[in-house]
Image 1: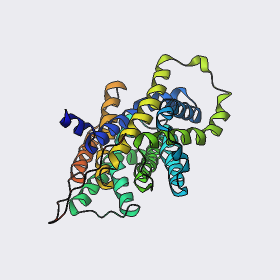
Image 2 (image 1 turned 180 degrees about the vertical axis):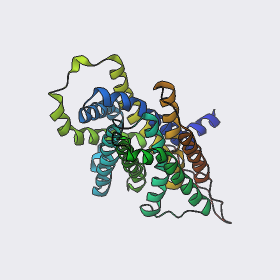
Image 3 (image 1 turned 90 degrees about the vertical axis):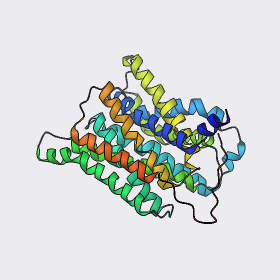
Length: 313
């Protein structure tokens, strides 16, 4: 039993499960972008997320006495990871396919590693730089068809791909900023606070769209997709991620984000009946290779001690 508990509390399990859940959001996002106005759909998502986790996560009044530094970081995290990422992703899905969007998320390890270098001040080993090169190769492998389509007048896929790529960059910033918090917050508390901040930031724009929305046109798949987007993608995935990211470095955590495109691409092929090209498969293979290189542990020098981080909720 102790082995199972240790596995469930490990960084590998938490980070891998979180990224697999995030990868599945591409499928739900495809449904939401078709049936919901952009900002209203985002607001519903945050309200669902806040309704589930706020009663559980905000039970300590000291959370509202966080230092100004942490509040600024939480606001920036909410904007980059919950507002900007969602808006750019859903807009991008209007112009590109779910499988392309899923494959573009393979660039997340690249963006996270670069931000780890500049924001967190981490330094990489040669094999980790090779992993970054492979992640960059996956971008060019995916973009080959898109670049060739730029010459066609009726193609707007390039715009969707650029929007999804911008969403990935904003998500990478969000995933790393939690390591800069001065207060030791649990994953549950961070998720609850971010859900509230996300709902507040998106509310003004959502109010401008609610008057023209036909609630009677909603179907059961719409409701299920929204509940999944709020409860599973927002709450559970972020809880698992913040539990795992405090136990490892930014570069190592970035490797697990390569599971996003794997999940998204497979689900797009299975559920959306989208065909996968040879170049997309090559891009997927290079993304998987990058995760292996970026996750290689650093050899301990003589006299080094491996410290473990106690589990938190």
